[in-house]
Length: 297
Ligand SMILES: [Zn+2]
Image (cartoon, rainbow, N blue to C red; front, side):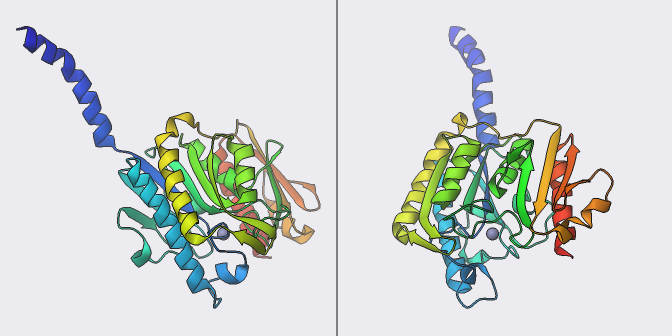
């Protein structure tokens, strides 16, 4: 009788454990190219270029090292979103079979396509510093030819911050970022210094860097991914408090002209458009549309 009662008492606990196991541990990975091990020049990140074939292999190897680390920490589902240029940088042949791949473009949420509230953690691989950062590999924000600066609620935000807040919108914390040392510093200061970062190179200029040797770089990426996922409970989702006030400054005044015609958008200065939204995701979509209009000029 006593044993039966004890079993009845423990059953709900077992059910909870089974539920946790059944839910699994889902990780979302967004992969850019400028912050990949070995990459220092747009000759390597441009798919039309002769040097691209080598660089896309480096990219796959960086991602696979991260996947190995995530699996070692108990990840049960990994979704990799190819997030650079035409977004077909990872050949499906080259990706570890434990991860599924989001390939190609356009995608409504672009570098964060496929994210939702079912994920437990988010990882950024191969990311870069914001436009206007000195000694940072291929620094830019979304579009090098059109965007000078983006602010949300008065704070300058690099691409990594805009994307982290999309993950945060769904309640998903960013647990790790890899890129050059400048991108790692920006990520730490914006997203919190307990963010696990892996600097795979130290830039000497926009197109020169001292590289971490590739085998060592992959070893660090694997170990960092494992440690970051193990410590995911220490991380909180990154969010902007509504109302979200967006400020988008273009490289030149002509790029601000088409967006000025939209209701709700204000031409704050020759090169700057501003608008506010209650919903952060809605604001990001407007931001992307304004940049698309500028690029169509
Ligand atoms: Zn990129």
